[in-house]
Amino acid sequence: MKVAIQAAKSGDPYLTVSEATRQINDTFEAHFPQLLFHGEISQLTVAASGHLYFSVKDQGAQLSCVMWAGMARTLAFKPAQGVAVRVHGRPNVYAQTGRFQIVVSRLLEDGEGELQRKFLELKDRLEREGFFSVERKRPLPFLPRAVGLVTSRTGAVLHDMMVKLRERFPSMVVYLSETRVQGDGAAHEIAMAIRKLDESNLVDVIIVARGGGSLEDLWAFNEEEVVKAVFACSVPVVSGVGHETDTTLCDYAADARAPTPTAAAEMVVPKVTDLLQRVGELERRLRDFDRWLQPMAQRLDELSLRLDTRAVAVLAEGKLRVKAAEAKLASIRPDKVIELLRGKVELYHGRLFRVGMASTDRLSTSVSQLRERLRRAIPTEKIDQHRAIVEGLEGRLLVGVRRGVEDANSQVTSLGLRLDSINPRKVLERGYSIVRVGGKVARSVHDVSGGDPMEISVVDGLIRGTVTDCVKEK
Amino acid sequence: MAKAGKEVLVTLEALLSGEVSESQVGALSFEQALKLLEEVVTSVESGSLPLDRAIGSYEHGTALIKHLRQLLSGAEEKLRVLNQA
Image 1 (cartoon, chains in turn red, orange):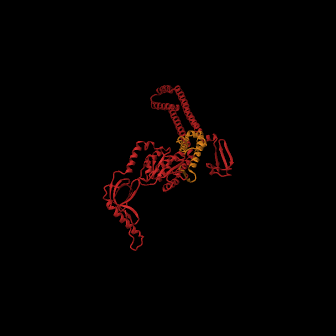
Image 2 (cartoon, rainbow over the protein chains, first blue to last red):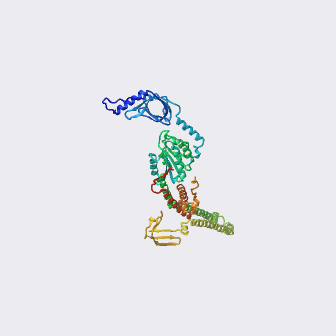
Image 3 (cartoon, rainbow over the protein chains, first blue to last red):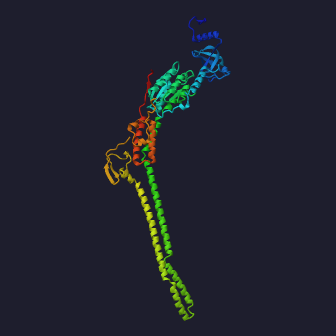
């Protein structure tokens, strides 16, 4: 093909850039009024204006394409990453940037994209072979001794993960097993890097990471070799490949999938501040002696309360019984019997008076008769008998009451003994002692200082001394 | 693969009966030591331990706290790179 390059009219053989661009475009137009080709869509961007910018590629080459908004609106399908298409367009150098591009006039869908199809096929097969089985997923370690990273040494991904790891756990040891993450042979390198970390026995968890990219860019993470290396790894693997929306077969094979590399870093190490807080809280509880003694003190209170209630009940019952006995006694006292009889005598006496005027003889006879009857009516023997019975009853009652009180006493005594057995003094008897400084119980090395006089209570007395030194236990 | 079974298993019972040496405590993983410490504190708080055992568990708890803090402390680590073969 022969292309005539026209020099500017001035005779200068050098063209201006604008003129050179114009001539190139004229040449393209003359030779490729319409270019037809097919390939896969990649790196698709929909601009705010509605224009579509994308690449169409095959294994060996790619062409940048643009489709104007007016044309894009008429498309019968939704262009997407990996979709195979047939393209009608003309080549053009965009003068402003010098970018070579195809201005697309027609875009036809060409079945499912080759890579997409390959991806799904591989996914189905590996799934059937059990590489993605959920039962096989292992939990991540709570706190790994060290973290392994499988990623590229260059680029933001490593840096971002290190920042996140240091932020959460500054002293975490991190081993990098570096690898290329894209291009021919990358899959083999990634698999090797995983195995190397695993065999080193240095790490408890491995992150396989890469930044976002197209399906082609991430392709290495879909390769069978990587899936198998992840599957075979003896420590849990977290996959942090691409952005949230990217999915790779490495994600399916890993024990956990993180939406981004940074998120993966967050998943594998806890925050050191949280852990320190937890340990601090447990330490505070362990050192809280009041809490230790609480259950013992409570038991003591309970027993003492039970003792009180019991003693009160026994005494009240005893009192009631004494009162009842007293009442019974009062109702059968001998003087009452005599009083009763005296009343009867007076009654007869009154009657005697009323019949007194009848006749002296009759009267005297009556009087002597009445006297006789009266004498018979006062049964001294019976009174004596009654008195004996009453006295017997009285004795038995007193014995009964005394026994009740003695029972109560012995119950009180036995409860007292039980109370004594849980007396804090017993603790002293076992060899523990209480240290007081300035009359206060010393619970901490902070309560005393060197030179303070101190009193040590032991079971049988006091030991006096002076504080010579305080050592705080860490 | 040699990693499985590497972790020492220590029960609360073994710890409190004094069968566990200081170096064994020092070899515990963070997770295990934290779990043991939680058990120690809970048993102490329940008041179910006799006094001498409570005192012993206080000492073991203190040793566990020391170990846990050690695991969390340390200078900022640098990235170590495994050489490519």
